[in-house]
Length: 263
View 1 (spheres, rainbow, N blue to C red):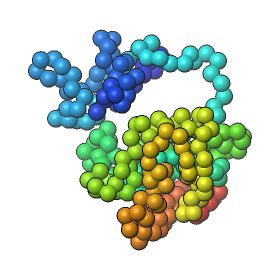
View 2: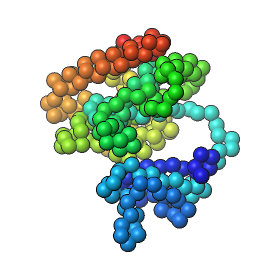
View 3: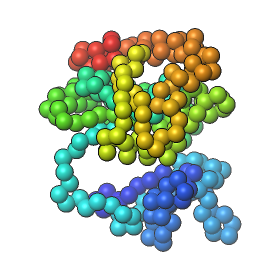
View 4: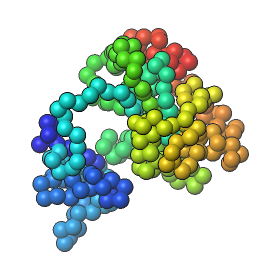
């Protein structure tokens, strides 16, 4: 139903204002729902977590506007998602040498999809794909080989989490859907002005049309404004040490991948 000509979407918190396309496809009679709350009078409640927040929907691709799969052009952009709560900006542009490293780091935050023991925890899973059946080093090595053959490909790291702390820290800020939408639009139309980040070596946005919060683009500014630079420096060091240790554990990983984060 969805493998060849359909969509598969998460439903928790699904809202017509934030995700009108997915909401429209999900709320039709030919959509199927799983693990989604239903009230006694038969109304679907996408915010009900009484049993689980791990709700899903599946529906025909024809339910939403989409590009025809016929004649799809070559890819120009690759977006690597990173769900972080500290220092990762809403978007960073990666140098070719950094791509495989950040792919292998696969930094994310556990959700209910991984069970109660995983929900809310910081995780590192290469490619954020826990189902790879072989040595994960193969993924990083192969991606590095592929990137070398595609000099035109632009690769970006996108944080879909927060900046400055967890959701119970009122000093932190959420990267919202409207922010991510502005990022993607800026990437596609080439309207982002970039500058180098002195701590991580990737490029961060100095200006992005339609984006209303520079602290989400350059997290260092949030920590500076809140007089938290000692904390910032500690996190930079901790991330660096943890990342080197994590990637070093993959014995068959090409050393060039580790070098992508300064290891």
